[in-house]
Length: 490
Image 1 (cartoon, one colour):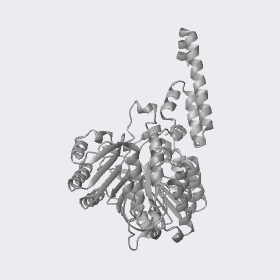
Image 2: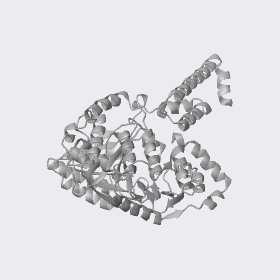
Image 3: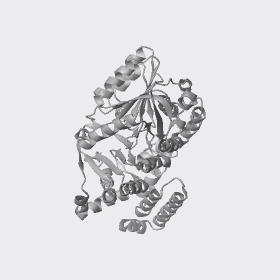
Image 4: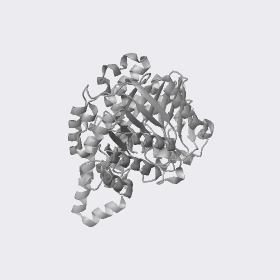
């Protein structure tokens, strides 16, 4: 403040006008924040404190990343593509044989209807699903699926590395392109920045694979759109009927950019059946946003049901969706649990309502377990995450810290009856800013298998003791709670 006053004193009237202009601008931004209906109360408080507490710099930060601005061009494109996609003959449940709402029990029906409000996709029957928790096995099976492709391979990933895993899939796509298979790859412009400049990417493009950056970021685009809106989805669709989704990027478990946290431990689902069409729809939407090329014709045919298949539903969210419904789905999963709920996530910085609901479930006797990494690649997020431990531990919630690497799997199981595998973390960024996708499965066998995988994470974790946590040095509590104050902005 002394430096600011000295600057005003030295520049006289000009300095006073600068100070007045900054005050008026910040006041206008505060009023704008208060007028926004979609922003959460915690987010409002966080941004107002930043604007009032840090003159000039707080204003610049808000103008860069304070608004969920997708960009006018993309907004127009999104409206056009939604007009083409949001039709009964395009969605998987447009096939009467695939519709499954009437077959769900009370709990399943509640969750399915809420999930449908998020992304428009209804639950559909006839899906064959396989669950994977090993990166090498995922890459091998995915490569084999590409080698068997006859029509198209459409891949959408947040991170694609030019390591062994990324190269194997890239070379498989080039082999497919040489057979006449249409191969398109959409990768996030920030998450896959290095890949987009790599020799692997150049070879893929020269080999007939169309590679496109999603939401590219540069200084010029910052004027028109928020730069940290990212496409965090992990989706692969092959020949309409086969799809992959989950938490795994196209990278080795050793994850070259951050090897000291390795191995990255992920959870992925391989799907055959109508729900693959809903994942394909998300790829078509993302491709159109950044290329203006419509691939709607790929979605006009129905996908055959698999015999003895299960009911599943795609859950997608993003800055162009009703984002608060994503947190409502998590909270509904907590409410619908009768005996047990297990959540795994690498980044645990949820909103206040989620913390309250988890604590309430613990107090009403539900066996609630949250599994997070013991060592996190984001120190600030780790601190903010631990700010939430005390209210949960005091309510009887079990918190386990995974010691076998960086637990990157984002999963939920409810009473071993319903399972969710997603790309979405339990944090504000995933809820409000990122494009995310996952699959909600209404089947006890699948949920039990997912719960078995979660147990393998729990077996490699250490339980956080409530008594020891409450006896920690006060300085650690101060630092963690200070980081927690920033959680609405993280």
